[in-house]
Amino acid sequence: MSYLTTSRCKLFYHDTAEGDPSQQDKPAVLFVNGWAISSRYWKPLVDLLSDHFRCITYDQSGTGKTVIEGFTPDFTISGFADEAGKLIEHLGLDKSRNLHIVGHSMGGMVATELCLRYRHALLSATILACGIFEETAFTSLGLMFLGGLIDFSMNFRNIFQVEPLRSLFIKRAATGHIDREYSDIIIEDFTTSDKDATNAVGKFSIDPDALRTYTRSVLEIDAPVLCCVGMADRTIPPEGTVTLFEKRKAGTKSPTRLVQFMHLGHLPMLEDTVRFAEQLKKHFDFAAQFYKKTAPMEPLPEKLQIT
Picture 1: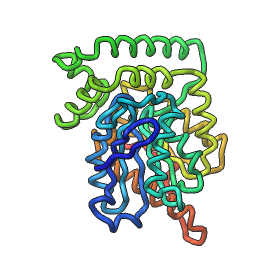
Picture 2 (picture 1 turned 60 degrees about the horizontal axis):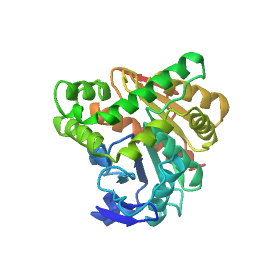
Picture 3 (picture 1 turned 90 degrees about the vertical axis):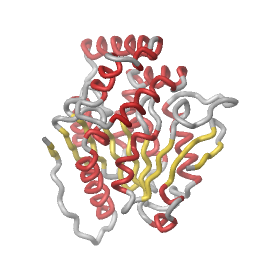
């Protein structure tokens, strides 16, 4: 575990190659967090993948162990991509095509920006639970309601530390069972994250202009993309990820795949770590073959529903 000082923050990160130098030559996976959560929730997944991949996790500005006191970071998609980009360059992951980027929830928007900035280093992108919606009066009303919910949550977030609101908060995030260790982490991270950062992220995640830019950016990724979603997600409507997949299939010739976990919620990496890791590894392996022009590629189903 280390720190990288940038113009935005003192960025806390963990690189599995630090404890095992042999991982330097393995394909790298950068995990980009969702809203108001530190990188700790990736650990069970990293434990399963690290035999085959160099895994990098980090705390975005305003969360976890990253220090923003004395800095003035802007809490925007571009700003969050700037700090992640500094980490990519610091670790030398921009030097060759050996990088997978995985973005969860709001982190999918940041991950998409990174995929375009480092397209020559990119092996694949995975967008988890970060969809889009057709612009209608109904969805506009829904986004306005969600914005109000964000304001309420931030003003009274300490109430989620006590029962029964604590359990209700966790059930909204995870439909399936997650270990108490990680439900504690989710509550702790949400209630201790920087309020300005958390508010800003919550707002740009539902901003119509930001969502339009995100849609265009996803279509511009010319590497293999995995769209992945828990169809019992109570945090973000899962249909948005299906729509994102369909738009990408219609708008680009680059490989695109949809995996739907029919009974999981917003946190598949904790609710069913083993099967989620299996799908990621299949995607990573396919992407590696995709760039080896002479190697035959094992076909994968374009859509997969996992019950």
